[in-house]
Length: 70
Ligand code: SF4
Image 1: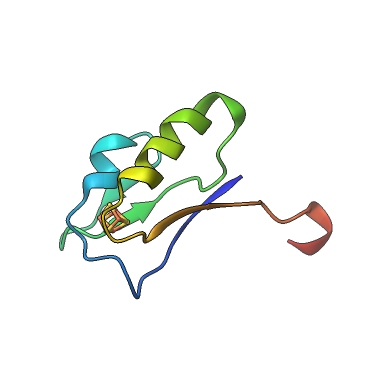
Image 2: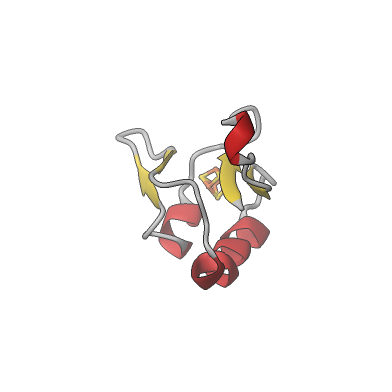
């Protein structure tokens, strides 16, 4: 799975970065900055919690593209 942000929805209050700091930082304006977007099985529960908590439905988990389409 891979983390994605819909920038048309994100309002940058940073809740996702507080819930998933190992993957998401914040820029100077408070908008999320994704590090490694790939979420492995060990991190999936935390990532799902951050996705569920996003008040703007901007943070998503998507299927990572197969190696042939990267
Ligand atoms: S929680 Fe959602 S709306 Fe808030 S900064 Fe993160 S992605 Fe954007």
